[in-house]
View 1: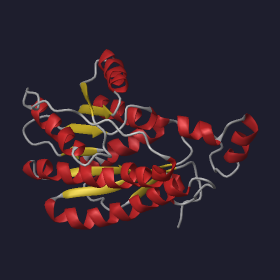
View 2: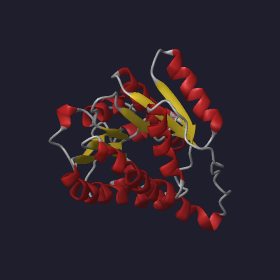
View 3: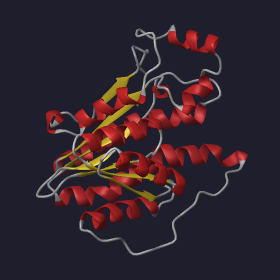
View 4: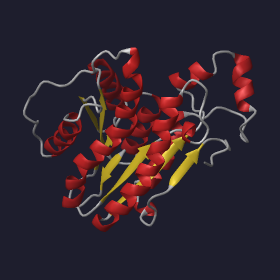
Length: 250
């Protein structure tokens, strides 16, 4: 999630997902007064998310963007800047992800989970500097601390985001840009449903939690809203775990 600090106009947020956690964050930020731009590499996902949130009276638009493609983060930021001025960016052919082969899954995972946040941050920093600063919230996963069998590339990619957060926080602090990291635990998403395929397995998963329930996407949204706000103006380089007490130390 990226938020340029407001100067003389309403600030905007980029939500890099139209589903579950990203959607809940987009809704919360819009409810807090932001104009939110949601994106997905599927037009139908963008359309559905925008229609739902606009139907709630929220200020939301969307665009198709595949953040794993090196040119798309710049397109995303250009779209936000142009729409803020009441225009549309010059048209171009938007990227669609290539169907991955079995051997490319690791590279694809690293591209989406590590390279994409770095590229989007790089693309938006100039816009933030124009406004006097900003806030970046990177979304990792509890898998960064507690890897699951069979999910090695995913776990490695999420652990890398912890280091990316620390590094970017140091590099961007002189530009008045804060960088923090949200680490969701077992949140009710399509991914967690894969891990808890039956009720018995779900109950076993809950046993490792201090708060004996799976989290809701909305449990993450308020934390992001706080981290992007002026109330968190002295917080940078930190990782906030929203995991119901899940063990979360490397």
